[in-house]
Image (cartoon, rainbow, N blue to C red; front, side, top):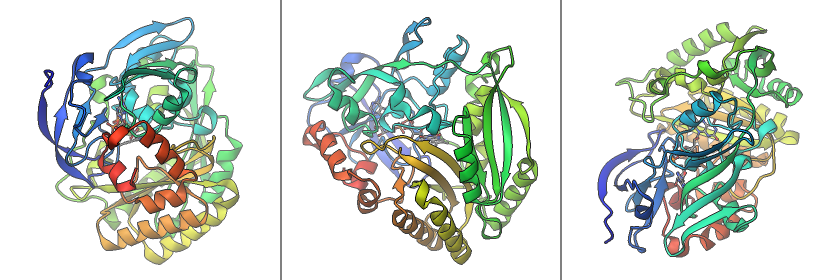
Amino acid sequence: MRGYALGESHLTSFDRQFEALCRVQRPDRYRLLDALPTDVPRIPRGGGVSYVAASFGAGGVSQELGAFDRLLAFDEAAGRLTVEAGARIGDVQRFLLARGWYLAVAPGHPRASIGGCIAADVHGKNPARDGTFRSQVEAMELHAPLRGTVVASRQRNPELFEASCGGLGLTGSIARVRLKLARPPSGLVMRRVPVTSLAEAAAVLRESANARVLYGWHDGRARAFGRGVVWVGLSSDRAEGAVEDMPPRDADLPATVRALPFEVWNRAGIAAANGWLGWRWRRAGQSPESLAAALFPLNRARVYFAGFGKAGMAEAQWLVPHRRFDAFAEALADEVARSRPRITLIASKLFAGRAAGLSFDGNGVALAIQLAAPREAPQQRFLEALAGLALAHEGRPNLIKDSSLDGEVARRGIAGFDTARGQLAAHNPGGLHGSELSRRLGL
Ligand SMILES: Cc1cc2nc3c(=O)[nH]c(=O)nc-3n(C[C@H](O)[C@H](O)[C@H](O)COP(=O)(O)OP(=O)(O)OC[C@H]3O[C@@H](n4cnc5c(N)ncnc54)[C@H](O)[C@@H]3O)c2cc1C
């Protein structure tokens, strides 16, 4: 025993599909990162805002890095930031935007931590232009039992660096990170391009690949399937920076959205929301937008998440290669017409990267499909059918989002799954690091 303390907490995944009473360590100094006995199973935890249970599981200790949230060094001239891995992406962006820099790749939830963004190799508002989070990471310091403290970069310990980007916390606790920054646009104009189908949306996404912000929103109901709008965010010449637009911290989407006692997203609720959003958005046009609002649009979506009620939600996200996408979208439309699942929204994004390890990356169009009441049998059958269709069209699943995936589906969807698993195992002696997610997938 070396002076560490453990508490107990009920932890729940953001999608509410898994919860467990867990032992939690909240270290607040570096030596405590290495204080757990070397035979205690553990997993690092950042903001805990993954849809799935990636940073906890029954029987292990969640090592929560929230106290490691300091910004350590900022090189304003070169655009480099050294930061502790528990820092929240929203706070980091607030600091940087005020100084003429930002992280071009940031997920939609402002409470995601830097460590969590690396471990899930997240994407931002236009992965085709900016890549995934790993492209911004120059070096990291990891703490792992048996190995102690190790620095990993593309030059030093490159295998550990590669395995840790998208490594789902299985290679150890990232404590500090050096990040490469980008210059934000001085202003942003969001252009709305209405589309009548997912195939049409894919064409608009491909034509706009270089936009700063690029994603589609679509109706998932059978009668209007795929109808929606693609948002194309272009740099504008607005002289003033985006700085003062960043909302205060307490306006951020909370880590856990309190569920309403009833479910809003029944068929009538979904129809009303889609009708209203369609009326608001499905008109060609453009308007100026603050960069902060474009980076974190979900700060305005608390009611949406609360509306899933205690049953929670599911998100399935699949990246399908261009040459298979239109056929996939058509087969999906047929499946939706047949089984009429309760889809609350579909989001589309463009990718133009290289699939590495278990990361969600590649070259194609991704669809994120959110559903209500995921434990109801018809919804489960739809999720299974969706996985079958996506696999048949060479789709790649996003592991950090989808609680319905199992090891077999992940292996079929991710080329090189077994190799990536072997590389992770090499950096996880004795399988000491593990979560509900890693166990479900057999990692
Ligand atoms: C509303 C919402 C919007 C989202 N938007 C996007 C999006 O636009 N793009 C996208 O790609 N993802 C998105 N996500 C997913 C989210 O960004 C990722 O799940 C991210 O990993 C969450 O970070 P976290 O700090 O909360 O990590 P946690 O949930 O705490 O953990 C996630 C994984 O990271 C590991 N980890 C955490 N901290 C460390 C550390 N210090 N060292 C090593 N491993 C660590 C954990 O072990 C775990 O495997 C969204 C999620 C939600 C709920």
